[in-house]
Image (cartoon, rainbow, N blue to C red; front, side, top):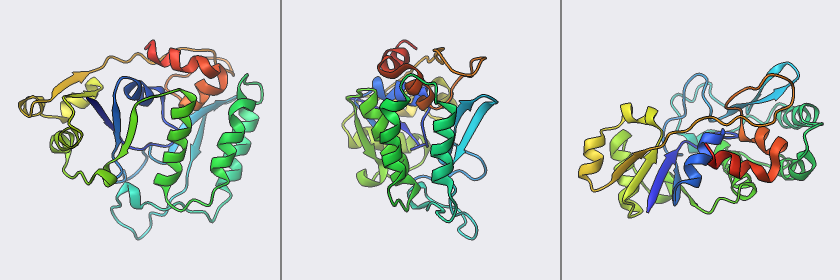
Length: 228
């Protein structure tokens, strides 16, 4: 079995799904620390006529100290949902596949969701279906896996009886590769070249949310990601 891991980020980029498409199981690390400052767990980029369009899910931070991702609550005291949908509608009004996917996105936003992990998982599952991904999704918290860094990876692979762990080369500097291999797990580092595809609004911008690709390319998105 081939396993990969990733934090359950908001509106993931194509590389996230490249790992998923090349694995049997993706473990979403929801039992690790929510990044302090600016991260990708509650925000990501789309594109409009001005360039980058940031969509951010407001979350409660003040007075909560260090939080585990699965415990982070959404701040629903603002109209952020309406702003997100309006931004997507306006920015992608000319996108060929907006009508195919917008109703599903709207249905996710219409839910009364308390925790960020619930929203992100609903969105990830939406992409899973849209990209016809066959690999399994597992939550770290549901598997009961603990540890940090290399230990966490080994524990995840052992729990799932995996013999191979895949990641991007940037992860290598944070892991003890020899320790992973001593545990009987082969570490494979994938080469990923961010794809270029038809985009609206002028000059191409790399590594936007996969939603940008999906709204512009539809069912071809899976092939585009695999070609990387």
